[in-house]
Amino acid sequence: VGNHTLNIEAGTTIKGSYSGSDVAALIITRGSKINAVGTPTEPIVFTSAAPSPSSGEWGGIVICGKAAVNTSFNATASLFQVEGGVDNANGDGLAGSGDAVVPALIDNDNSGILSYVRIEYAGYAFQPDKEINSLTMAAVGSGTTIDHVQVIYAKDDAFEWFGGSVNCKYLVAYKTQDDDFDTDNGYSGKVQFGLVIRDSLIA
Image (cartoon, rainbow, N blue to C red):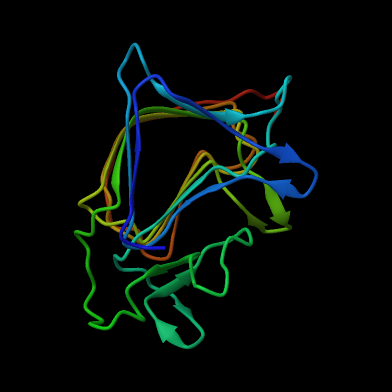
């Protein structure tokens, strides 16, 4: 449901469930915000709840914003249904502004802050070609702050942007199995200081 804010304190570790087909993912819906602000010595960690974790055991983080996206859903322009089976009857997995009461594009939309955050072992394959990435940014606006985010052991993409205009800095993708940085549907933001470290034994 929109218009809520999730605040996460520095040093917090959040563990996603991994039981069979009941796989956790954190979805920030349109109009809501996540404020996850860690520090260099107390990062916020999102990881698997498994005792011995491995890649793809939980879904990851999906942020749905109201900015521009050059696709349509159910014949409504500038509306995107996020991959991975995260949508529901309430439209909580939709991004973009195409079905807004005032259908103006909100490129400076603010979905909160991710800073000094590490995302581990995420990237669940809901169906072939419909996976959840470690960090999915769907129509996320430039009012959002994303910096100093590290993704490690991603099963699918580490970072994927679907439209939107968010600017990101200091992103690290470590031992990803699919794409490290992936952009789709008219992403128009900027990424500065991105580091990719691959492992040929993994992918």
